[in-house]
Length: 180
Image (cartoon, rainbow, N blue to C red; front, side):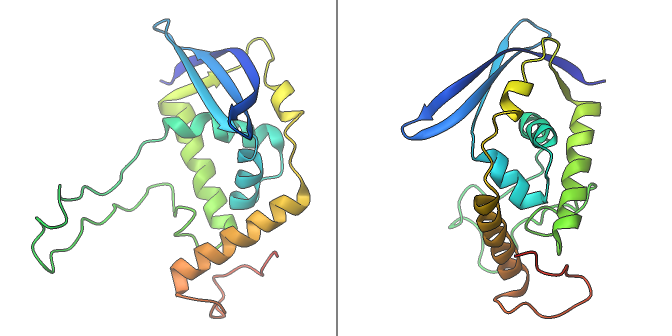
């Protein structure tokens, strides 16, 4: 059963020099407070990365991402200590599907990320908003369609370069029609 983390305050402003953002403060069941601070630009990045369009869903994703399980590979303490030709530990297959950089399409990445967030909300943490503070954030998200498009292009090019080496991308039935 997921812990309930109740939102008790929302702050807006400059989170670093020249960086506008938000802080969402939650109260944990043990009485401790947790402050999750993120740049306003995070909305545009999640929209670009996963093709999300609903600001409320994007905010929900942002608030639950810190609670994801990490299954990063275990690396030797020192690269020099690793014998030559020794393989680096491989990352286990993610039960939710491909990561953003492993997915061959935005749809596959979005479906897997939604599955990860749903799992967090079921098994680990459910961020709740009993006082209705979140509409202030997703009502003032500041996303600009042109900036989202530019970020989406950068995400697609980066992912495809990682998967296929370079553009132009080989034509396969696995790839979506380019969005940009």
